[in-house]
Length: 163
Image 1: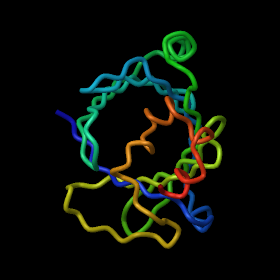
Image 2: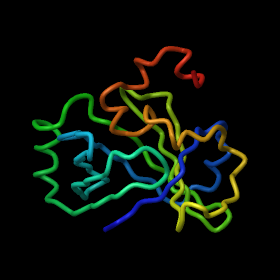
Image 3: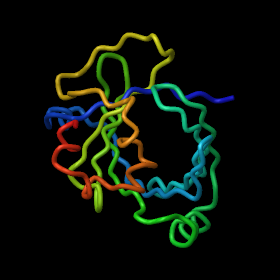
Image 4: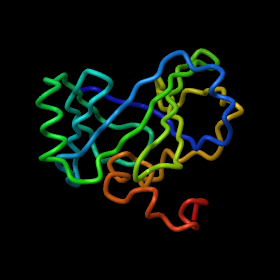
């Protein structure tokens, strides 16, 4: 069983931009969401995969990911996935021995920027960069699957401010 352990934070400044070493464009959609798992199709630059992730809330979840044909992925995003499809640019940034993924959302989620860092264990201590703010790891509305169902553009001002 594969396990993903990651923490997610809101980004509060552009200081991360000076340390970017790679960038990817991503387009992803969800075929199915149940109480147990979500099934996602993602195109990342010119490659594609299908991902199955447990629906547990928190920093640790089961995750399985497999490569698929790019044309098939495009067709699945266009025909099988609910709208809106989540679009984002992912920037990779190194900080204190860790790779941080800074996601700058586009389209219906424009204005939302989050940073994620994968951990080796749930109790691992990390050094937070100065450009991250409030942790949102346990807030389901920041999960990409939820952003596809209820985009950031639909959030109230209170929701955007943490309410």
